[in-house]
Image 1: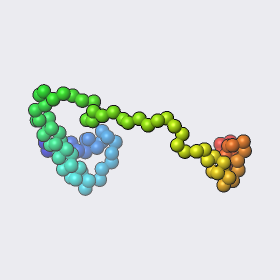
Image 2: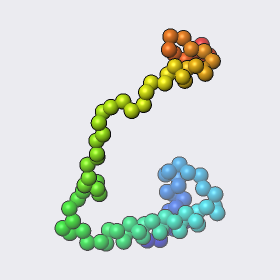
Image 3: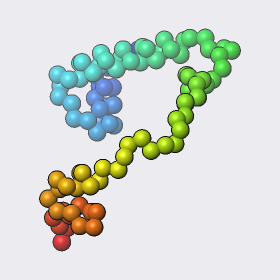
Image 4: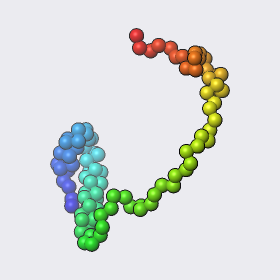
Length: 95
């Protein structure tokens, strides 16, 4: 399917895009190619093909719910400029 430059301009207007005149011809070609691809996909016979929600019928391997990283808050806060009661103190930005 080939789009005209007027159709591309209209599509850009609907999408709230401002196109330069030299951009229209490139987009005209790209959009026409995309529509041709959609047309090819619609022409494929899918009779008897089961619809699927996901292409992989796999389940996730679950790991044991164990702590693997130790708490290092004291190490991280040791280099912080200001800390109080385990919290980082930062300058006030909202009055």
